Length: 191
Image (cartoon, rainbow, N blue to C red; front, side, top):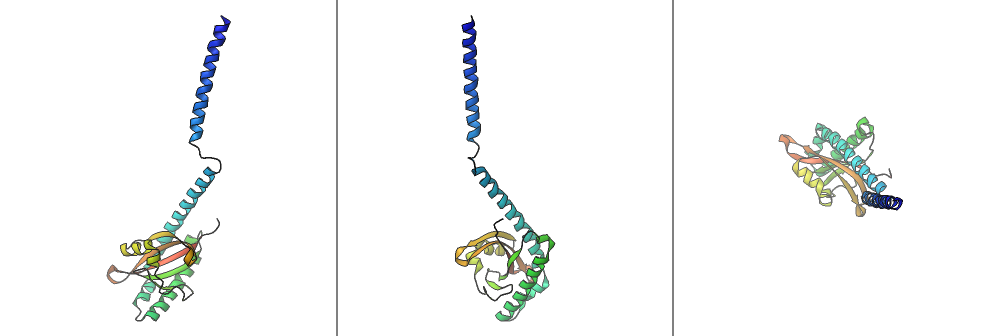
């Protein structure tokens, strides 16, 4: 009699152990390998932070793009006059961004004023980049300007030595027509 009881319990124990092994293996198969979960969470966190920073910059830029002094840069009579007025406007936007409590988490590296096609009129504190066609290099900028929307994108271009989170907003002239855009770029850091 004891043999039958031990035999039944042995079978029950083997079935329970087998099912436990199968369930544990199935649950662990869904988990990422050690180290992969950390990388996945890090990528998700970075992506979320970039999206948040981009939205904050877009909102802030859309307010600056409505500034009448910025619009004056597009009304200058000659190309050199437009470039100088655009550099003055870009410098003012850069200074405002550097001192803005809203943008405390990002530090601007670049402010650019572009025409409606994405061609650089001028940038802050330098005459470089004038005439560069950013709309051709970064099609999302040109598409956003044509639609009259704000936007953000990561600009990673080894040929141009750029690694930026770029946010942009359209500048509207008389009658609401889009005359250009305002772009602000923040450099990526190791954080």
